[in-house]
Length: 300
Image (tube, rainbow, N blue to C red; front, side):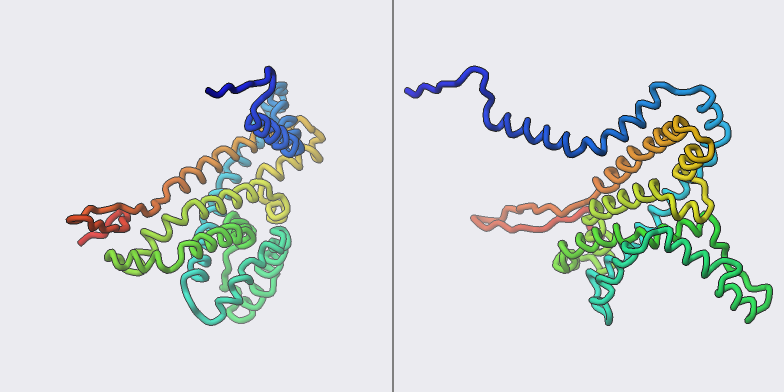
């Protein structure tokens, strides 16, 4: 017979560790939580005149522009980063090892610097259009860089390494054996890449697109150079142009509403990954065969 004595008021070691971990997490997150709380508390005391002005003259244009920019950069950068990651991880060609790290270099270039370079080179007075007019006359035409498409392309080129880095790690962790197993089940190489390797890499790709979306929402330098109105430029004008801190806080609070939608979209896309499952098939006697089953199954 065993008697266990417990001291009144003393918590188990596991409970103490959980409490200390929670306290440490709260302390580490406090510098980030304070600005968010200040922004959210501005919604508790709204100013009717400020909201009327914002709803009539600022929010319609800003919301549409931000949504266009967010969707365009997510699609272009996601496709570009995933495609480059696939080529680097699964293909062998001259210069692959050099490109493996060179494709990460845009992370070292701020987006506003890339915007300066793009406008200086591709604008009407830039060297490219001047050379085209000299060669082909005034009929030479280049798509305007100061447009929605221009700012989407510039931000995509600056931010695609987020998707490239994560997707490359996903494809390398799968290895080429995944494609070989899929080919033994009747898939072609292209079909195996599209229906097996890519769905398995969706969580990594979704995480990269989520990071790109956050960077796009927070960007100020590139969009201000392109004179493209988004929430960041509207917040800057409200603070330093209208000298209204409250209007800037309320615009920031509206901007925060985009963050749950970005996280929800990435979780929805990443949660649809179809990972392989192993199924045991009973045979005669003591023999059992193991087959790797994929969905959707190839048609016979």
